[in-house]
Image 1 (cartoon, rainbow, N blue to C red):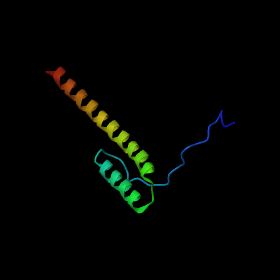
Image 2 (image 1 turned 60 degrees about the horizontal axis):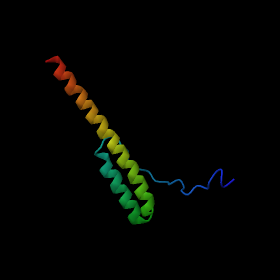
Image 3 (image 1 turned 180 degrees about the horizontal axis):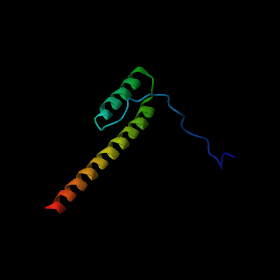
Image 4 (image 1 turned 45 degrees about the vertical axis):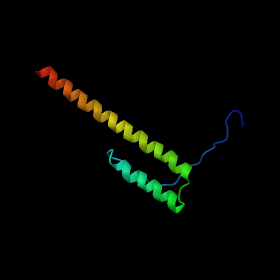
Length: 80
């Protein structure tokens, strides 16, 4: 069975990130991760993996914002 279903190498991490609603919220999320490592609530590798999620969220929001701006700019150019 181990060959068909390899053993999980990670485990669920119980940590509540601050809400991520805009790109600026990533600063608070990363600060919370650093604080959790400092107090021993998270290992550095756990915090690193969670930081990757925060980074992916930030990039997705930025890409969406760029797309929205580009769409508005193109629409304003067509009207002229």
